[in-house]
Image 1 (cartoon, rainbow, N blue to C red):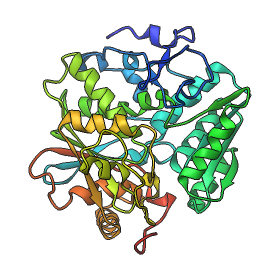
Image 2 (image 1 turned 90 degrees about the vertical axis):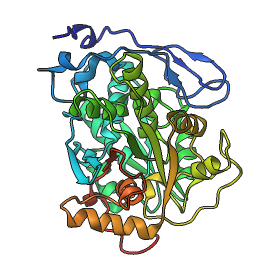
Image 3 (image 1 turned 180 degrees about the horizontal axis):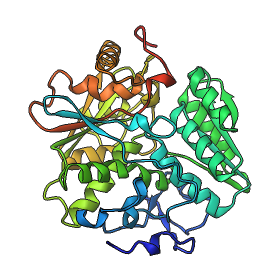
Image 4 (image 1 turned 180 degrees about the vertical axis):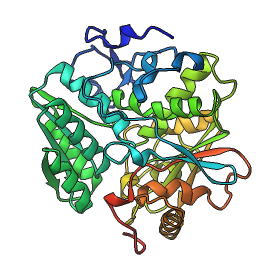
Length: 381
């Protein structure tokens, strides 16, 4: 077995951050949450080499089994996140059940990284902003880590998600307005001294948590990946994490080819799909928005838009959009087959259930539990 002792020490050296837009570097250990020059999101200066398949035998049954690929040592605050089941849906399409995470969404993959980093840096307070799932995950892991936490949420967030956040001991800061207004309010508070901004968008550690989704697929499929990875995209944290993992596995020679990345957006809020159709490298103008029951991906201006568009284009994939009617039907279809998934989490199944990708082997993530929101009963909610 590969020796992973170097990855379980609190003395592990943290990598520096860098700005993908202008190259500005931010030293490891800083509480800076964005590029000091352009205020854009940061990446990690980190190029790990994943362990071969046979070296994983007998390791801890959580995402921390991929120790060589993670920028932090395994923390004492782990709740056993990761290693979710992969099940067949229909034909060549399978689903990874990430709604079976400790807080019932895939956001645990990144939240544990943020909480572990915050605990190491020792801030006075942690703040986060979320339409629900990231907030519940950050609140839970901050509770586990003994960190003071406040979560900014938009008015209209699911009451069940709000109850989960407060149950973990985090304070709620409800913002009148949409998801974008909530993010602005949190960013305004993030520069206060002693504040760690647990941003699942700006902080690159979150992406290095979500990438374990693909490392798990690779292991579960015996050292292979499917032809296509279909991922819901709002801020793009799961898609960008998937792109990181694919690059790591391909560079290490552990996969012969890269799967195509397909990004799914709600037709009601689809700024990235609009940019894709325009052949643009970044967002184009102001995209019209409408109410959607896929609240978790209703992001009008994702800060990592350029990176998302580049990742999809480089992979040979594309953008897909789904209507409210398709989302409602897909949620009920999954429930009729025993899988109770929240409305945002069914978007990918809505996009491919009618054979949009043909006979290509495909995996979709079921990202959040239906218990968080209930069934969507009508268009728009």
